Image (cartoon, rainbow, N blue to C red; front, side, top):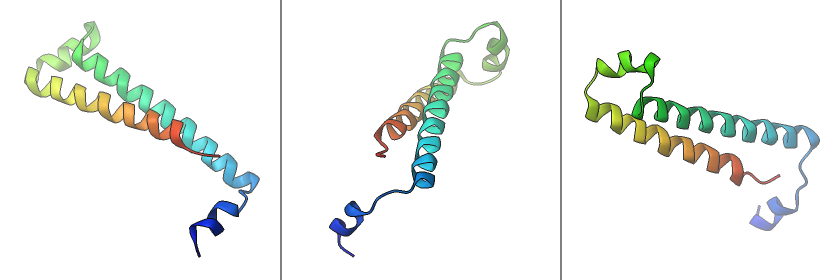
Length: 82
């Protein structure tokens, strides 16, 4: 099948709902990952005890990785076509 054949096919209501749920899931997970990165990079009272146990450089590196992955998940949720 050529690319044109795939573009002409219509999505069913069930497929559209599946894409919408996946998109919302990507938004939520991306937001949670960005929040987790912020809590690790800028610890508050509850997270300060956890952050103090580990190497500060590794915690900051992991926080940046969380931000990048969270941004990717939000982009992936935004980029889905219905």
